[in-house]
Image (cartoon, rainbow, N blue to C red):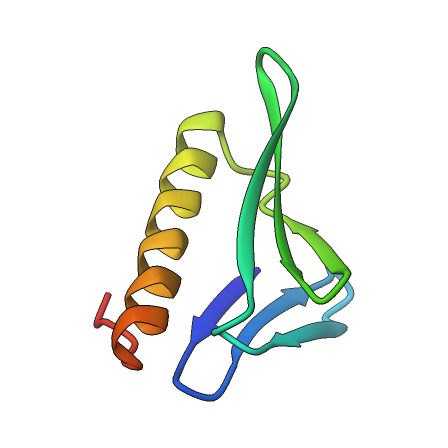
Length: 88
């Protein structure tokens, strides 16, 4: 999976083992990253916007999920405050 953010869109791309790509596009101003704790040791990351939800990062460790969620939240917050996507 790959998450790309620019001033026009946030794109989540998933490549299946067969090579088939699926992509979801969100407006970065409205997109939110959510981390839901399902059990004490298992959480789910979701990108959300206008009622659409896409889970991603299922194979990440809990520490990696926390890091990805924090980084994306910071990128999206900076974009909403400044109109610019910070370099990562």
